[in-house]
Image (cartoon, rainbow, N blue to C red):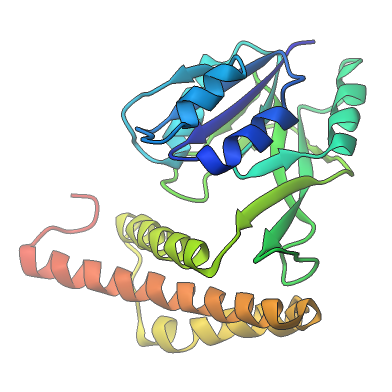
Length: 257
């Protein structure tokens, strides 16, 4: 049973070798690159990956494009800053030895923040649907926080997908700013509004959920920082949404125009 690994990239030179080495055992690697200016493409081709460079239309469309290029019976979707652990590799291979009973499987993702593995804060186990039968899966068209949709029942695997997403505060805040912009644009297109409640209360709720309800305090000062930055991201998203609506009212361009 053929397995294809798919990923999208842009200037991921620092992560590519670790990521691709962890999936070098699959039958096919598909990389969809978005105008990288570093050695991302060079590293990808050195691992025998098939590299494509379509026009960027957002995370969801890019991953769907990668899926459309794959030829495997099964798909393993992975990000460049992730690594398939040795134990997860063996679990996947064992599963695919025979025809799996389900069409999709969620993997428990374990994320590193400033060099520390986060075990609470709602970050672990962060189950993500990444292994699925190609004929049954499709990515949503979301600009950010895209996901795979499989119509039939899915299950869970036990071994972790390692996520090296936030090596520095600069990296985290850069992504926070970028994702809050995309999130605001998604809500604006959907006709959502930013009320005073959203600006004043939702950031506080985000902080409380991370630190207390999801036991972020058990992750030490990193847990406190995650809670604070999450609330900041919430505030930025709704503030940017409000600014989009103000600009739309001035120009007479309603959402979706």
